[in-house]
Image (tube, rainbow, N blue to C red; front, side, top):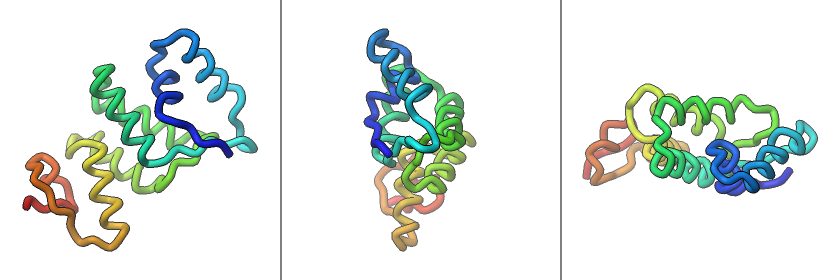
Length: 131
């Protein structure tokens, strides 16, 4: 197994740099397999969603499709896969941002009944409490 950094995935999904995108495509489409998996941390997932959403104007719906494709892939091992899936559902259903949803879900998994926030939008997600 090999870890992937955010920039590899950004090049793969954005296809914005011909040389780097070609390398990312070759890695993900040809080099990875069920015997040669790629690990993707929750930090990379959050960064990927932020970069694609903010810098490339990818819509929340399209971001949820990307996350879902990654979760369904046979070559990606995604850290806290079930929590990433749950956060993706919140994003898909318009309940809040992916990162906020994931923060609440990770805190709940760690035993926190709630996560305090000053962010009014985040406080609408289950697990958050406006401070």
